Amino acid sequence: MSEPWVSVDQVAAHLGVAKDTVYRWIDAKSLPAQRVGRLWKFKLSEVDSWVRNGMAAEDEGHQPPRKGT
Image (cartoon, rainbow, N blue to C red; front, side):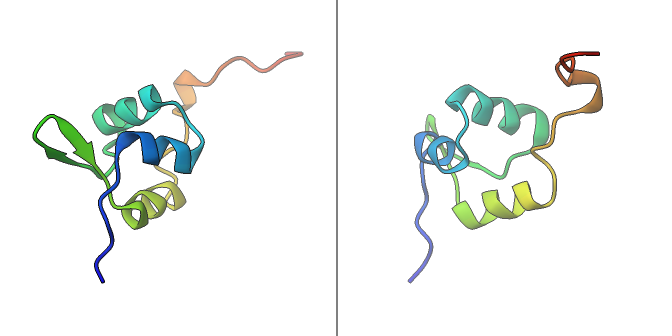
């Protein structure tokens, strides 16, 4: 059986992030996604591989300031 396509809501819940973060990662960090009409669809195995490869890490120049520094 083939892996089902999932929605932005499902990817956000799977990763524990906001939907806005998922959309930002599609635009800025090449999160693997396919456009189907007006909707974005994902394969969770591809998303998990993308995260494991460090692609979801924050850019050095965009990290929030550390407390106490």
